[in-house]
Image (spheres, rainbow, N blue to C red):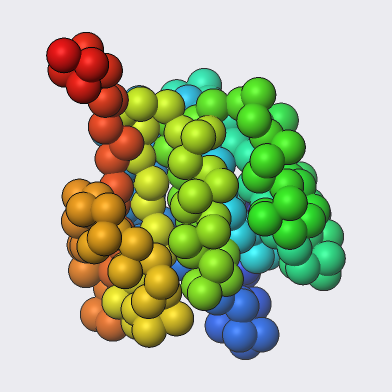
Length: 193
């Protein structure tokens, strides 16, 4: 099956089975951000059936990059493994089964140019805090579903406000959008003077 056919199949399968896959507009936005940012190492939190993972890998292949994706649902993980193989992206995608809260600290030797958070919304602050040290200076977070599920993410919004963290919300779809946060390089010389 050609990759576009596979993506159409996964889109329809996701719709029928209520799998929270990203929209096609969002997929295009993510691929564009990978190209614009020259992303080579990407972390995805929330694999689901691999629909978004395949889109991310398509752009990463052009950049000669790699992807690490974490999901805690065993059925989703197994589906994703098969779908990634079928898409012939298993050479650049490493899928991890487990709770991101326990798996992220195990990745401390890695560093990423981009982190896509699309896991359990009420855990967004935890995912952000645990993955922040893994993001390179100048790298960026993209967090999905930040309008529709803002109530579930209230602790994250409070944290951003309290810490005065610059962020941009982009309305990608008719009913939802993503948040972009760039990890700024801190000038330590200024701080020590």
